Amino acid sequence: MSGEFQLDLAKSKATLTALGAPAGLSATQVAESILQIASADMERALRRVSLAEGFDPRRLTLYAFGGAGGLHAAWVASRLGMQKVVMPPMAGAFSAVGLLAAPPRRTVVQSILHALPNATERKQLFAPLEIRLRKELHADGIPARGIRLRRILELRSEGQAAEFPLLEGPRLLQRFHDEHQRRFGYTRPDRPVLLINLRLQADGPAPNPWRAQRTRKHQAKAVEQRQAVLPEGGGRCTVDWYTREELQPGARLLGPAVIAEYSGTTVVPKGWLARVDGFGALELLHSEKVKAYGPAKASGMEANS
Image (tube, rainbow, N blue to C red; front, side):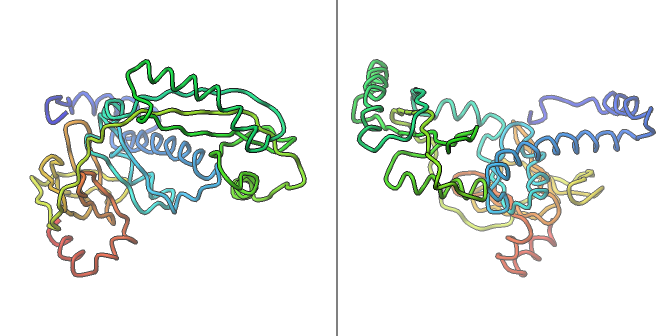
């Protein structure tokens, strides 16, 4: 909270010491265990929405937000082999920012549970749903020209228990089999494809609060140095401390480091580079991507970190 909420270190240490006493753990060991448990829970959640859905997290970027998002982001990304993390501006309040910037939206779902109809029949099924949502958005003062529709079909193969969504469009059957292969590792082209649900999403116009600024590559300046324990990379060490609000687009720094802002704290472990893009987002890049900047730039930054 930008220094406005003071942590009582003595009471915090006493509480952790008492918690760890039955197991013979020190206050620091208990604190590290709490972090490890929290990060493990986040890792499991990310595995459910990536690997369990057929996506390789090593090819994805982790988008982290919330007050504690930056504390765990690089650590969790390392566990999943991810090379890049993005912390948006105002990360601690990003859900609230999203609500303010999101378009007005209406969504309706209609159950079908029938063999997949042809394109003409599907258009007829969507028609009454479109009329309904257009009327609802029009009642909110949104003109017809400002309404965007997304037609989604939730499909599964006959005999299966779970369906998955696909956008309405050409080559629907082929796209279904391709997605089935990607998710499950096999296809069943001889089995009928069932349409389980129609899902229609109608959006109004959305204001865009983000404007890119010109970036100038430069080394960020630390405001101070502090002792820290970074179990995710660096161990007990002296780290540079930065204030995010003072980091300008193009600023770069190497970990281990800590970046504090009003609504959260971001840990940059050893082997990670942080940079600020033109939108004010904070990007963390793993050592494999840091190599792309060249040894001269990396070593020059490391010498001052």
